[in-house]
Image 1 (tube, rainbow, N blue to C red):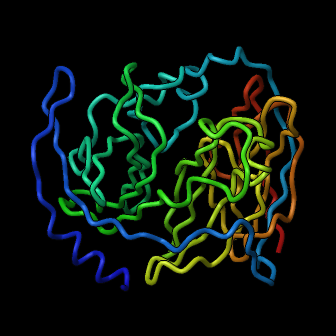
Image 2 (image 1 turned 120 degrees about the vertical axis):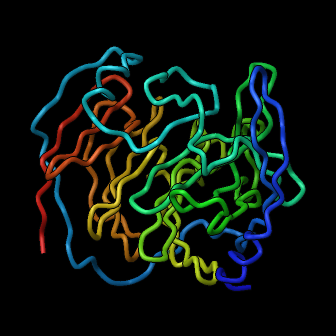
Length: 299
């Protein structure tokens, strides 16, 4: 089925009412496309027309949970609704009118996890019903809306992408959820990762995948262990992302957007968490340090 057909199906959305504690919310029933089973590394040949390099021009230690000052200084294009974690600086209260608080997709009722504000569209992720602490976990369905549009443009259910093949050490902690996504010229770039040690899933964690939204074909999937930062950036022909964890190497990675290949990496003090691009500067919030990089473009 083509993506255009999926969009047509999504236009037939049944709107119902659901209740969260203390407020009335909206639930939308959606037919979400099921992508093919994932491969765990598949890159293309070729080189980016334009590459970038990063030069450190600023560095400072942070206090790990002092998010507010950094996010006041740097615009971050997303809000979270999952009620977990300690970063209140990007926690939303009431979702934008286009995005419902919950959806029914492929027989599962799922709850809003995050809204990503793109240039032309909104992307929202939905995960499991809130646990006893009110926390939404494991987002698997990604939905796109136009601004001021009532019906979704498309929806993808990544439930089958959650588990790496083979034996795992901590099965209850290694489900790889949808963490971030960007849509560029009909191509969806999406990251999946779990929040524990790489060895727990045999090192098959934290990839970025490129998907053609017209037919849902996988164009490429990066090598593992490159993207467990909360977001990634598309800068020209480059995807900028980060990976790190306790007792593991911490890097900012540069990927060729056309092929998925890693063409450079920059060592950082601790795990990159958030990345912001402003002009010719890259700002990276790591676990216990803040970096400023000057971007140099190379042809």
